[in-house]
Length: 118
Image (tube, rainbow, N blue to C red; front, side):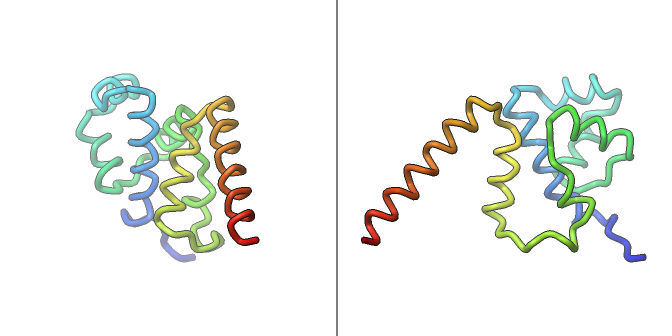
């Protein structure tokens, strides 16, 4: 069994947590207090890729609606660019109304691209 639990595997998760927290305008200190951990521990998860405990991992991804497939099955994911990964993280922070706006913008870009190619 290979070991995927090194810190590099959790750097993206940490960034996803930080992005979601900031999107909801929650300070690191406020979240740490709510979770019963130190702000420094949360910072090490967000910035240094420290592995959270399993219960904390579940709390964080549930609280911020973060999809965990790429963290649990990293070898089965199709290679994505860093920009696409960051976009996925940001999309996870939006509600349905915001996603509808983004989808409309994406469709508009595709239509404009099709017209340019004709």
